[in-house]
Image (cartoon, rainbow, N blue to C red; front, side, top):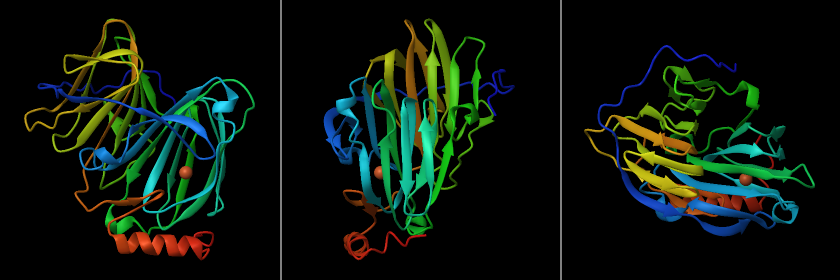
Length: 295
Ligand code: FE2
């Protein structure tokens, strides 16, 4: 599905959320030395529950990404990789393999455990994208691993009358549903391309935690302009029914929201569980080779 017509339903936001705080990511590296910017890390776990991490990566220099992310484990959450440009090859211990390409999404539920690799499949050119970590409810942390590649042409999208391009990666917008839905965390993940002088409104339930990451240009959220490479935490106000976005000069933004789990969060590296005992078990299971048999 790749709809280009306007949806019938149009959200109208009566009271917009505000920007509560603007976050600047910090440069770091992960995997075998991939340079990236961590814009959401452990200090925001509680505030942005159920989201655990957002990394942004982008470079036209192969040396910044070519080493990739060789075999490593995960347990207890989901990873959502959205690639704007380039190619990444995925292999995991549950037997999944896929080639993520420009504009596509890879959704992986680590559940009780996978070992996977995420390797750039290009030796030059631009590699650019994001990886979001979405927590799993306690009852689902030991679920079977799951994986889906969604190629760019399969992502539901539409263009509004004002020319705003809306790509619906999770949840729903203006009546158009994404291919991935999650019943407990109910994540919303939109990629919005706003041309100069355009506006867009998106309903968000008041209790859901929400943030926006501006990755091109500038976007005004609830009346406050947020510039490129900034994450804006959107306030939770009982009277706000969504977010109003505008862009004077044009911008692109990821709009992400979800229902908080309000459960204990214990993270050690690639394992995110509810207790220290569960983390110790994850480490012991990984060391004794039980992740490789996670199928
Ligand atoms: Fe990974």
